[in-house]
Length: 123
Image (cartoon, rainbow, N blue to C red; front, side):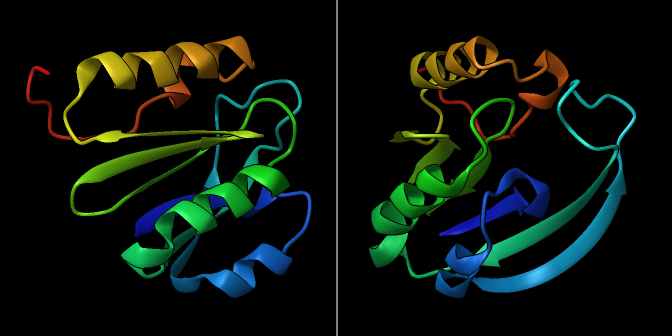
């Protein structure tokens, strides 16, 4: 599993022990929601694909309650991780991707932040 998370989205950092952090960047954000800071620490991470489901669930338990998500992927699946909810779907499944985006909107994630990229197959 490979993904990206924002350190500011977490209620605690112990979960980071489950991940291999491969890159850290600082981003200045021009469009944060009202409860988001304007500077984010973006952490690229990896973990074994055999641990993907467990790691996704662990991350969903430590995300702040509204306005945040984490996207990650394995070779075959996309993971969109929200507070208390994980969307896992085959890469390219537009229907499931839209369901994840709809849910993101319902928890106040700005539309322009629902921008994870993946190859679409028309499913």
